[in-house]
Image (cartoon, rainbow, N blue to C red; front, top):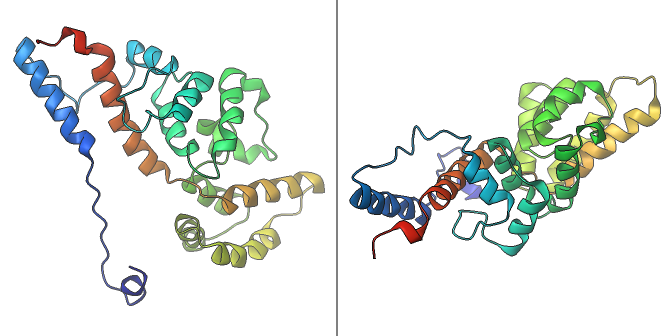
Amino acid sequence: MKPIEEIGLLKMDFLGLRNLDVIEDALDIIERSTGERPDMVGLPLDDDKTYEMMARGDSVGVFQFESDGMREALKKVRPDCFDDLVALNALYRPGAMDQIPAYARGKHDPASISCPDPRLQPILASSMGVILYQEQAMQISKEIAGFSGAKADDLRKAIGKKNRAAMAELKPEFRRRLPRQRNERQGDRLHLEHQRALSHYSFNRSHAACYALIAYRTAWLKATTPPSTWPH
């Protein structure tokens, strides 16, 4: 994989998901039973019944949300919108799991959300003040430390590959580019929080969103067409 990338050849990763077949099978059953086939592409992402089920931790059979740990996380966060499912997909990963309580706290008490710099508020609004996604790390590097788009992308690659050596190389430049703060402690806190987030595995938000979409569709099928309604 790495030598191919280094010499400039095209590298493509293909991921097969059994859950896509599960969804199609469920749709076939529903169509045979009711004569109608739900439109997954046009499915609204705000179904109350689906979120109520997820908030109870009743997620066995739901893509990415079946484990005991994830079911406990659902009970803590009590998701009520699609962004919550995206965030939980990224939070329930090595290195990010310790931020689940912070996300849940911010979700239920917005006044508890604290940002070391007001410029971070629009960047971290969707993740309740938690530096969670690779895309956020790129935005912070550009907005706060003045990284170019290319340099911010170098940071993203280092995060995505968990290349700690590459992240360490970028650390001094990030610290050097931080503008002089009126409150030096505030600047130090920003730097430490950013580096803490990057030193662990940060998830790609676009990937988390794709997984959350499949999760939502399987959750919707479970919430709205339970097995008890299927023909025997």
